[in-house]
Amino acid sequence: MKAPRRHGIAMLLVLLLCASLFLVYNGSFYSAARDANDTQTWRKEKAQSPRPVAASLRPSGPRLPPLQGYISIEDRKPLKMHCGTCALVTSSGHLIGGGRGQEIDRAECVIRMNDAPAAGDYASDVGRRTSLRVIAHSSMQRVLRSRNQLLNASQDAVFIFWGPSSYMRRDGKGLVYNNLRLMSQVLPALKVYIISWQKMLQFDELFKKETGKDRKISNSWLSTGWFTMTIALELCDRINVYGMVSPDFCSGDPGHPSVPYHYYEPRGPDECAMYISHERGRRGSHHRFITEKRVFAKWARTFDIHFYQPDWRPPPLPANRSLDEVDAKGRQT
Image (cartoon, rainbow, N blue to C red):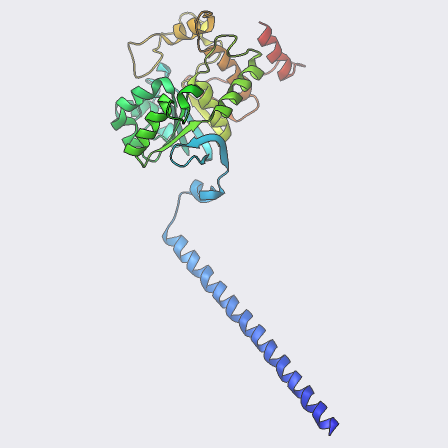
């Protein structure tokens, strides 16, 4: 009796093993078939919904690296943005007559400053698109006055506002912050960010590190150009700068034609006169435009930065001289 019982148990185990193998095989088969069907469906949908090459290669949504220090007015989350090639468009009168508008618009991201207009009569020289606009606290009212042109026409753009911490405080006493909150309520589709006070301190430290000058002791205000270039270094792989002259431009040939400080204010002050007066100013606070441009030229030797309209590049380093040595000599002079 024991032999038949053992035989029956063995047969039962064999049947269970065969059933298990069948289920594993069957599940693997259907899983593979399902994966194949999913792949075919994905390929079909992709073929029906083509995207630009740059957009298809660029991570989207939460995969973008957060840029700390740029805080959303709406939800206080950090900015998530990254661009391959950026066109950084200054406000210089040198842009007029250059015909670079289409070239600028071909960049993946177009960065502008303050209330500098695009499109319209300026389109052929400065382009139409805006991806990011960096705005000083002192320009906020001008931006609000030009709301239809700058804000309503740029719903997809990111707006970064900078200013002293007293203007940006969130306890009801920050004048600029309060206005930005109101603006975001009136135009909820806008992507509005402010620079945190910790980040502002980092901008000051960077200026001191690169120039050897303490911003407050030297009565200097960092320009919107300084903020814009530094932000561009964080979010762009390559930066094409339009309308920025070299550091020695205004001290070179005195016969070069006069251009307005702002291309959209043809009767405004001369650009070089503005740069020189600010650089030499000792009473009151001034921008150090020429000093900042020396830093930008230095950065262009290390990072992928290029200057157009006027076209120039930083001179090569002297033989057997390091970048730090040349920078230290510039600080002393």
